[in-house]
Image (cartoon, rainbow, N blue to C red; front, side, top):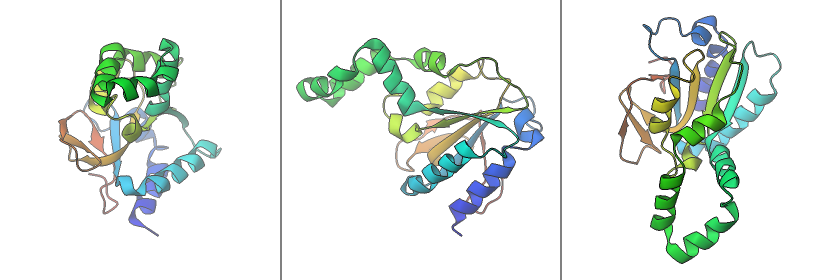
Length: 193
């Protein structure tokens, strides 16, 4: 069994524990957990997520939010989805990215992600599609804005990159972004760090 599959099996067990669901042992920190993996192993993670979605034996309620699908939904709401390809072709990538950043913000994402009622002790909000939504939304920016809205449930970020406890580095290549309010789940050796 690969190291990633072992870590994903540990993750399945961890997310069901009362300590994880209630954020015990975090010294009153926000319960944001980051599960890092190599982006080259994305299909293994996608397969795992598919299994998790249909696992009726879980002792928690998984609320998955694919950030890329959320982004596309926001574009649909703005009525710009059909125009994106033409805009990119005519104006270029930089212009398109500038337009997205000026018209779609973290509040738009939070409004789409928010759901009621939260079930503290049962719910796990899992963010996926982090790599797909780049560069339209950066997860460290979104996590900062999400904290007041989801302080009662754990947020689990499936992150195709590296996190050393202070810096997030998407795909293990891009310039790191400082984010220190999260906790890394299961280092490569299969232990919690």
